[in-house]
Length: 73
Image (tube, rainbow, N blue to C red; front, side):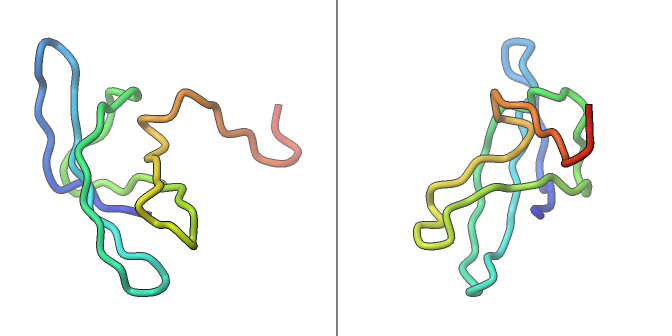
């Protein structure tokens, strides 16, 4: 999970900046479009990343995929 540390709107599109630390202690920060249009500073956002290459990451709000939990519809 990452923490939203900044939010801005550019050309009508909301963007968030998030910070997170991997299980190995590596720290990352990135600015991405907020496709959910619901995130605010201080909120948490799920991050998916490759454990061997954590620079390869995507925030759920910037993903073009929908997450469906087992047993979900």
